Length: 418
Image (cartoon, rainbow, N blue to C red; front, side, top):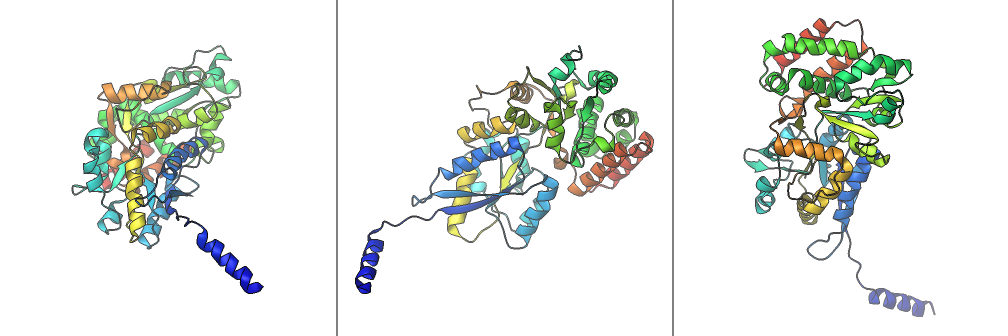
């Protein structure tokens, strides 16, 4: 009897159709805030809808790393260097992957880039150039992020009988009255957001040309001169409104204070727009987004790229190329960037659903020459970390004078490798 049952089970097993196994591709990134998670889900959904050459499904295995890029980058690089690579990973355009490329650990995707004509469909050219080493392409840019934005909650100002500020200067003029009402004039998060805020003020007050001359050309005369001296004086004035005990741990928490009306404004990149969208707030009605802090509309060419660490499995190799191609398709570019708050890499996509902030960014990108490289595209990561540490110390320590901070800044720029 047992033999008959076993035979029946075997017969059913043989009769069952073969179930194709999915090709799983682990993708690491540090997109974990509300807006970021909604955006990266668009990549995952699109990849999960694809199949390999044999018709087997592809599967995005999410490898989100909690925290900022400063937390995630060392983990990502360590895994690749240690022989435990993921299938694909987010990084920023710049110098972070140079050593990995030199060690032969990153996949060369030049043939795909040439076949799909990325050089002509992706803009600005600086993004793909950041993915190119010795004439070979190693990553795919997925968006254009810019850091020079100030975000304000309109209701905070109108409730006090104030017109929403048009720039950082008007915000600072309102600061005493905001404080009297128990509202923090400017929210700020610890760590890299301090450096971002300082750089934004440098660009707004000293100008793009001087910023690039200092960070890219290492112009010490400008770094130590009156143009930058005024910026450190401005920061000394700002820090009375953002004392250390008011700083929050994460950038999205600082944005959240503005959304909740507990703070009037925050200086943060365009990715903050995703947080306002998740909160169902409408740009130009509930909140304002001011490029160049409202002083001079500018964009820097930051953003996100994906690299594909080398893998011996042919199925993984094929899936990597499929994902690389998918990331720059029109539909995926629109779906991702509308939720991320960033600008698409392509000019030929349908952006009828774009909000007020994205429209402002596109206007600058398409019709202005005020577009410049991101700091990591001009100076090494170690020097940037030193600069951010200096800015963090200055903003948290009222005993450090503007002149002392400027002198230390000049020293870092002077010793930065070219």
